[in-house]
Length: 279
Length: 222
Image 1 (cartoon, rainbow over the protein chains, first blue to last red):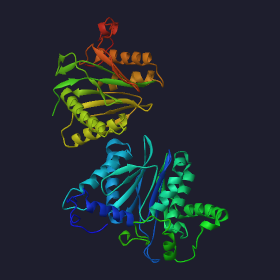
Image 2 (cartoon, one colour):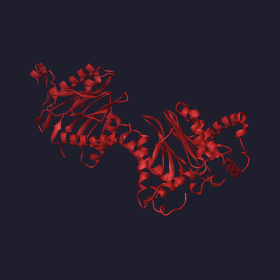
Image 3 (cartoon, rainbow over the protein chains, first blue to last red):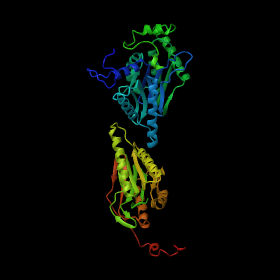
């Protein structure tokens, strides 16, 4: 995408009928570190890659509990994500207070989308620079939605957003038909494996990924590091025995792995690790 | 603040297939029995039935609020719908908030319904007191009908038995409540929907010796 004379204001259309500011906002999502989500009939799992700035710092929180039955994973401007999470929490708690009943996910998602749309039609605002994967449970079952800065939202069986998400999407595309009937544990395993795809050869360990689950009888919560590491260990050993060829030089630096990964990676987004705006 | 045109008790119970509710059709203007065809039970949305006692105009106002609530619920067009529990809690919030502003809606409400096989029966008063139970009543019904219900209610009543118990309660209310009239409706709500009966009357017997000689054996000045 290149600069042009129609991209200064969000309220300016281009002759081709595009709103460039909105599209630039969606670029910000593509630059953020990856987040994935997948669902079965009864559970939804969210996962994300947490890159810390340096060894000295903590990593960004990208998964938020919105209510007992709803959680969200974000990619892009995490500050925008936090503000939207606070809005979602507010909506949920107000509904619960008035109706003593959990807010149906589908309605929350529409409210969120309408909020994002407002920012695409006011000259004094800018679009939210964050994509949200909303996972939730309601009367009609388990749901996974993706909310876009443009104000659009879609429901998914499985999805990935952020940098190198195409690798995860390819993995999920191969297997999504089985997800509906997956057990909770298999779903978590698939989520971790999808995260691994986005790491492009870097060692997968629980310190750099976060997994959260919501399901029938299981309120939304983030899995603790120990549990995640255990699951990683179970299939890392299996993978080693199964397919030594797919374990590339994990020992070499991240940059080298990123360059090698370009072949599998989708063009169009930069391959560097954590984007500056993700911090 | 005081009510002008009032209606008397509502009695309701849970039975095998849902909720049964009874209310008479009298509207009093003070001590005059002015209106004889007041409908006090209305369906709300797909899953609920509301019965009210107290000021009629406030009941009509509540119906307008609920109309709007259900309209917005339907406008989402998403397969979700407000069940009896949600409507009951919404009403509780409304009643309590009005009470806090010293401008109450002068009603006692009974909200019953069935959603996804789950039966629900609750009540809210004009000051916001709310609870759920297997059988509820408003006004005089609390004093005259609830004791009968406590004795005779059991889980999984048939429709006929439920109606019999309600008629027993309504008969006592007819004998003893000055603002009751002998013209009532019984409404039922099940998973399939709401049915409100045509108005009918109860058979009464006034020749009890206790009625003929009310002061016999009475002690005290009243």
